[in-house]
Image (cartoon, rainbow, N blue to C red; front, side, top):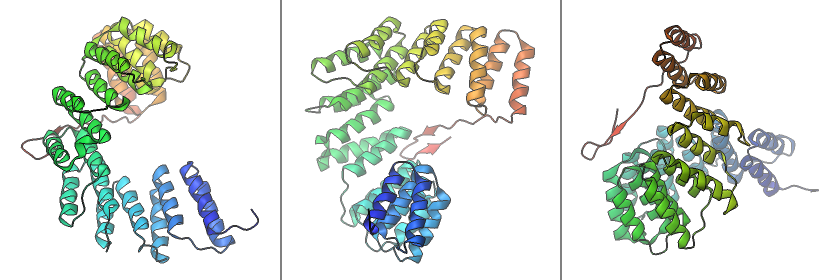
Length: 395
């Protein structure tokens, strides 16, 4: 290209940022400014901020913010949105709120961005307040608003908020939107309300594959393996083609219900009948299925035959099976692999120590605990959510 204008440079920076080459995009940006003498515009800044968020470059994002202030670009709504989103994604909700307060003109995207970052940071109740505020100033929620709030309900299983949103969706006409209703199905299934989820699903005139899979995932989550299999066959009979995600939940349903032979059959037909090559998630489900059912060696051999590198989650599933069924030989090998993959995960040390204790090998159990201390591995405390009345509490 003989002569590059600002649009060309921006396109290059944007492409690099979206492709994961953030450092390279910064180099191109510096060349644009200091070698070519071109000043950035709002498109440049938005592309750079997007790259910062993708790679976790908070310090670089703050520098870009400073540059935007210096260049007088903070009057651009898109630029402010990008920084609000950036600070929210990095957990600095207060800074995001401060930026939002400085905005003279706030559109639907402004409000949705604020709702999204509050939900992401598990501040769903605050997110609902923003919905109330936006309605007071005459801006109505759209699909993105509702889906974001429902996602927040799904993450922490807030029943009362989901019910309130369901009522609003019906009155506002969103109950005809398949995407929104599918998200509601996921919320109800995750909170254990399978009947409510099924009623929402039945109300859909033309459920798509994602909607079918959402119901199937709910059955899988709560151990209704037979019902999941039956739903799968109904789905296929209606002409919906299952995909990798469908089979992940179907195999998970078999695993949680101990349906070993059924799981093996569906693992086999996904490639033979539907030309879907098993992925890591499918192998993980099969390892869990075999391990839960006592076929520890079969699970071990399946891992060894995997065409991809098994993750810590796959090995962890097998280690749990070794603990349940007292297989010390495989358990020790699996634990060693987990120590190498994730040396700071306390669960693996604790599980191996517990296995030694149950086998009466007290010295080995003590040595495992000592190893854990030597590596300065800290036990991670758990966290639970409760919903007393209409308030969300964290324990």
